[in-house]
Length: 282
Image 1: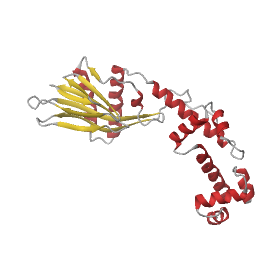
Image 2: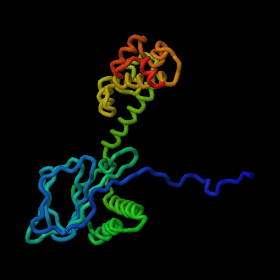
Image 3: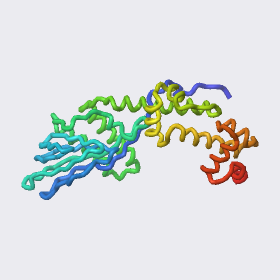
Image 4: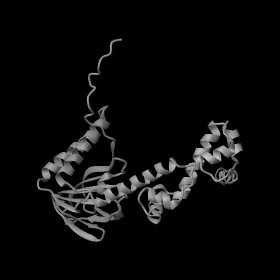
């Protein structure tokens, strides 16, 4: 067969791995007795509360905000809030609660520095963009999911382009911490048969031992040496199940000081000896 180039064998134009989780997106005309009692927003969510008509009030983290038509209130994950209005003049609001997953972050919106309140210069434009998403949510098309995703991304891009909230320092710092932990795991995985001391391990990624231990536990749920023992046990299990190496050889290559110590730790963790584990796997 004659070789031919692919017609679309071009440089990559765009690729992404992003996702939206939508918990609420709707208009509501508050009845006279409408109110939202003291609540806390879920830690991974961001809410946008737009006043379409009349006035209302919100208390966020102890501060009261008097809102009128065209105001947009932003509530971040973990914020405490309550809302209410004048029963004689019920307001109409547009509310959205969502998370925007991107680049391994459960909600990248949380790393943006939003103001608490924005005054929208052309409220009718915001309402029109909001209605496009509501229309997609009401669709009965076979491609409803695509319609919803497209409308949501369009609305979110419109919102962020208008507000332009900057990235906070916390995001950059947190991303750096995660990279340090990933680097530490890679460094240790390459040296499992060796004696690894905490001070040396921390120094390899440019951190002092105390801080390294704290952030390692925060990001992985395990202390560094606990993680190292578990990783060594995982390697040992693979070797027991897939090779004919002796217990002594496996203890040595997975980083345990002696076959006796290896057997004791293995039994404590798995409730059986390495040899019995090998027999059950086979």
